[in-house]
Length: 147
Image (cartoon, helix red, strand yellow):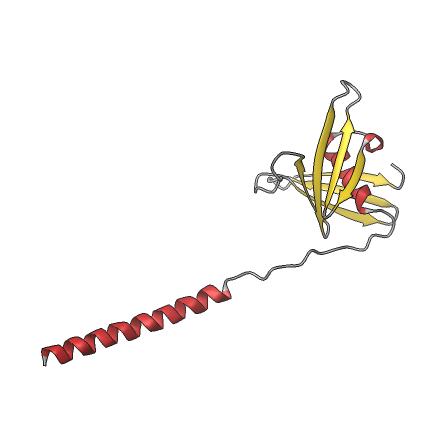
């Protein structure tokens, strides 16, 4: 009788564990985020190279006229020589939809919760580069075609 009770007890425990595992697996599966494909916005008057140029001009406080941009694969490589001391600076930029992510050429991507979030908006012949900081304050720089 004792061995029958032990067997029933073990079967009951195994059955409960199986139900709990099934429940856990379902929860895990529903929590997996969907992978989003890169979003591309159709620009009317500006190019993505313009956006990269104006972004670094805005962040670094430099004239967009001295900034050079080249594209390789999905990245934009931006460089300029500062006039005051002739020092060269190099950066890389990713653009996804209207979001912009940047990094020093050999540094980390500015994507932590403490880094500013950078977006752009094209309005007719103007482009706004918007930096939103972690305190929700913003710096908005506006550029026109040819700036």
